[in-house]
Image 1 (cartoon, helix red, strand yellow):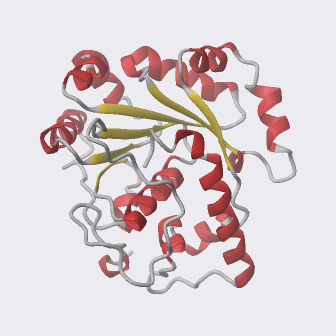
Image 2: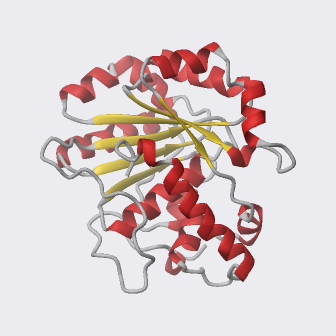
Length: 276
């Protein structure tokens, strides 16, 4: 994807340009007590980490809030390809990755006010190892920064095993969000029934919610496969900006996207004070 197809810079950006879609999310907490936060989407592959990241970035752009974004996916840095101003590691080397993560977190601490989103590859262990060795959660708390861990889940007990592994690595953050992604469920199956039959009564899910994690569902977007086939990212579609060489969505798919955006706003309302 060419540079000119990227959405404008995320950090130190100007107010939204004329023609951007109106804000549809609750205003962020801007009180003096509001601490900067680092949002970290985690989950197994194909669970929607990048999809959620694009939605959160688009929300920040739409409302004019600065956001520091790091794309540490060693296999596919799609956020860096679609947005200007995204930080990336110098290489996929483990030691350089961990040093880059440290630098990214330090940038948030030094700023004292800028929120951040850190996206790593599915199953990447660099952050988990860093969290355990650095005692990351209590240290960030002392530094005045909140960590928001967002688990993207499908209807599979293996996804809950991933949740347990992340928490055991020292990332059982007080601000933990469990998102049941309906897009991971086959279109011919009812999502509520699928989640209820697989993970709904699982002890890991129950224990995580019992300790304070919040559970929400992310609606399915029926035109998502069409968007992926065209190479049209979610943030571009939400902003109504089609990159060069990409065909725009037709009226039917555009309406599906508009409805999904509205339903997603409602679905994420219970965690809007933790997210953007």
